[in-house]
Image (cartoon, rainbow over all chains, first blue to last red; front, side, top):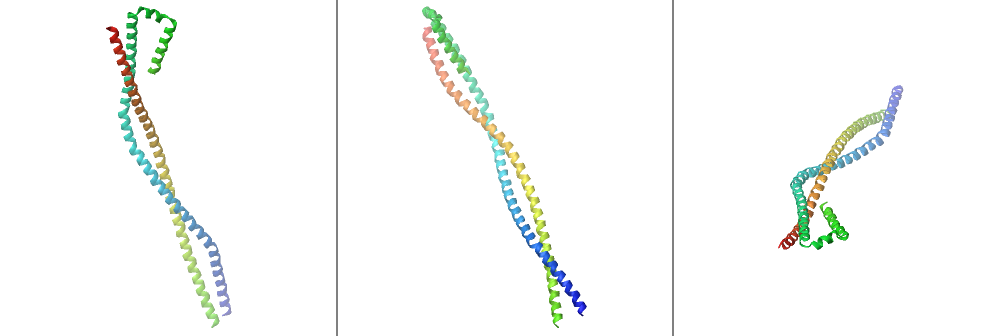
Amino acid sequence: MKKRMSWFSVLSVIVLLVFAVFMFWYIPSYGSLLSKTAETRQALETSIGREGKQQDEYDKAVADLPVVQAELKEKQPLAEEAAQKVTDLKARRKELRAEKKALEEAQNPENQEESQNPENTSMEETAGKEDTTNGK
Amino acid sequence: MENKTLRMMLSLAMVLALAVMAVSFLSYRSARKDLSALKADLETSTAAWKATNEKKLAVQKELKAAKNDLREANLTIEESEEKAASLEEEIKTLEEEIASLKK
């Protein structure tokens, strides 16, 4: 009986020791695991939120793009047309200025002589330069 | 009698210890499985939002360029209209002056 009791005691001690060691490992490990799980869950929620936000922004940009492109398609020819109109009007003004100058010269030959004066010539050149600048 | 009681108590303690270890181990495994699944979901979600972000940036770049072109076109129209009005007035004056010179 004593022998059997002794064997049983040894088994009990071993089992309880194993239990103690197991709990010594288990408690911090399980705690750490739970903590990591909570962190990962939090990160996942953040990531899902970010995913939704990115998707919303993408959808908005995709929806806005055709509207802006359509408006651009409509406005670009108008802008080209308006710029061309300015160019044409400048050319017309240049023609009229030349015509006016010719008429003035024909009517006042004295002025014509004056126009050959270097001072007047430089003034005309300045006016010509202004035209060129406006043309740009 | 005492030995018998002690033996029963020890047996009960051993059974309880084994049961607690088994349950704890299963719980640990389950928690690890959950963590692995969460990590996989997180990777998938991160990859998804990064891909969407890249697509979004490309579309936003295109949108920004289109908006700039549109703004420039509007500005050209506005400036050209002003300039054209001024030129038309100037041309009208010149035409009047020419007409009076021709008389």
